[in-house]
Amino acid sequence: MSNHTERSYFILLGLFSQSKHPTLLCVVIFVIFLMALTGNTILILLILSNTHLHTPMYFFISQLSVMDVMYISVTVPKMLMDQVMGVKKISFPECGIQMFLYLTLGGSEFFLLAAMAYDRYLAICYPLHYPVLMNYRICLFLASGCWFLGSLDGFMLTPITMTFPFCRSREIHHFFCEVPAMMKLSCSDTSLIKTIMYLCCVLMLLIPVTVISSSYSFILLTIYRMNSAEGRKKAFTTCSSHMTVVFLFYGAAIYSYMIPRSYHTPDKDLVVSLFYTILTPVLNPLIYSFRNKDVTGALEKMLNVEPVF
Image 1 (tube, helix red, strand yellow):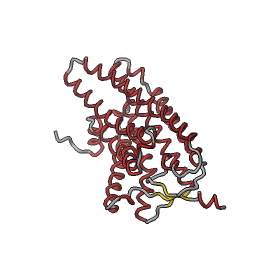
Image 2 (spheres, one colour):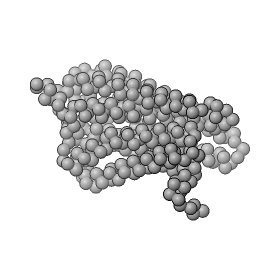
Image 3 (cartoon, rainbow, N blue to C red):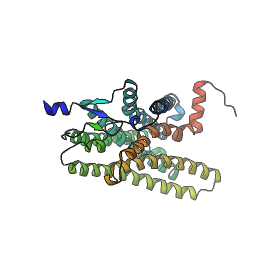
């Protein structure tokens, strides 16, 4: 009964306990949350409703938007409600579910970004063979594989983490149940999960980063050989914006899960986690789609707004 009582709930200290203006920070995060939901939902509806956007690239973008909506919804609503209600507790089952969902969605997005880079590589480097190399069946296979590999991350790390004895403080120095933050509460040897987590990171981070780096290296080489200056500019602008999101998302994850704990502090971990849990779901639709003429044209058509220029 004593052990059950100790493990019945945790206390999420969150972002607001570290802020001098918690109310203002809460409003800002709420606005960002609404922007992420609105942007990604509009993008999903546009891609589903407009036949001109039924291409492999937009299929993967729609999958990314679905992941982003779910990803930001796993952590932010709970954090905002706790601040409004003045409650910081999260039950043991809720913590486990939250951990599983964010690990699954994060892992799926890692692989999906790699699939998107591979799609761009085929489209730019092999334009004539692209319809055959990236047909609808292959798109479904790649997207399903991303979801499946992401779920493996959740199924591996969540049970191991949640079965550790948490006999220290129940205070989690984070705004959600992240694995590294939970490991600090355990009074047992965590070397096993550290090894498993490192191996998972090699699979979930380094392999996709290698695919992305290789794909964009070939893309840049092809762009350099283009005769059209306008084509080079358009392709380079698209690739550079994509790489910005990739570096932001993967860099934050590598810091959180692969950099030795001696380089970490609770405040740094909170700031870094903001990048890949809150900011990237807002940036993804802006960078990948709303800067695209096809998407803006579809949006104008949906809203029945005539183009200004």
